Length: 500
Image 1: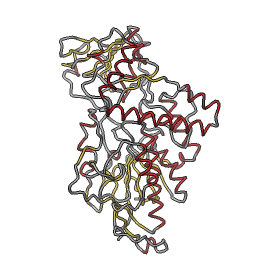
Image 2 (image 1 turned 90 degrees about the vertical axis):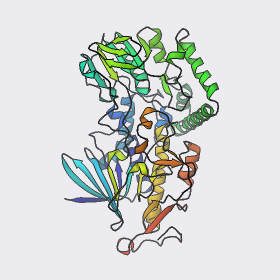
Image 3 (image 1 turned 90 degrees about the horizontal axis):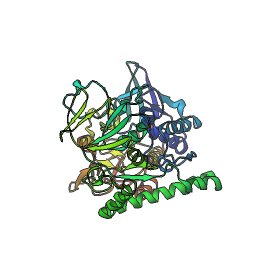
Image 4 (image 1 turned 180 degrees about the vertical axis):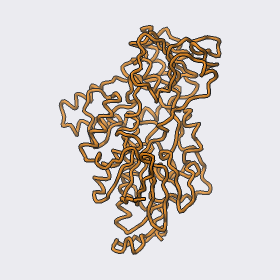
């Protein structure tokens, strides 16, 4: 089997992968790289999801890249616009020429003897082999082939159309149809108002409510700045403002949950003064213990006011021929039932990982700076914020990885391995979130602790200082010198207790 070698392997050509390639080209211009993408297109999530109304649940000034200003009028952008943005970034920077489509990474094995990774990817039912000095996983955190479906009774008896929102049927006509959307997260809150204009009626069926907050789809201040200031300055100022506001809101929600809850429900009450907010809009948890749902321009509330949409808060007893039987005894008849029931999480795109022949169980490792795994050399993964825009952290991680790659090269080092040695550390789940899809996958995610650098701070300011400006050689990374045959002319490594 032919083997191709690159300095850096990027897995995934979505928002994170294209951004990582840009940073690598800018900060490490002499390094060769390839992007392996399992699907046939650029865009990741924004190419996969095709349901009506698909949009960002963060503003594009922070979900967009730090290096490429978002210039559209709408700050809350639709899926096709985001997909075009990612594709345009790839084309403008020649990144698309480095992508190998339909290459699904199956396994990655590190060899200390060879000082490199060997990656096997499936392409057209055949295995392709690559080697790389460093691997950056940008494959997201959920399975693309299968969304999460609870084990409901009687599904086979239902005579209407039933599918998961992640796998929306192409050309589906729901005009005049009765639709039930199961779920209360971002997908459901997007689908309901988007389908309400054509459907006879859309019901959002939820087991429990989610906190919702409305925001204008267009940011008037940002649009004013774009008209009156240089494009780069306008974008940077807007981005900074959005970051600060996001962080302030999150900290206030965590420190003053009752006041935040009161304010959020008060804003909904202004839109739906006669609605049963206690039943349908008041979650059993505090704000930001799960992600808030964004409602652009109050579209969800407008659909409810119009009578075209409604919310049912109940549990599913079983599917029936005509719809759903609920625990309360109520029956919901539907021509179409959409499961907006969340994701199946996985790490590293589902690839098997091994180091010197020993299989690595990601759930048994600890996350170093939220981007590397204890005991695993020369591999990083991108996992964005749960309390802010994904790309804010993706950008910082990519910058850090480039710094690390350059450091290895500059000092003639073969590898960098995080070594976890906190025997008295208090362990915590990787994501401090009570959302179902995180709770179902706790054993698949790496662990964190209460002490740096094994702690997830969920703070852009902290990560900015740590990932962009912090020391690479911090006493936790173990560095190995490159063998003479592979690095005889490299500069000598610095004196360090962790260089061997």
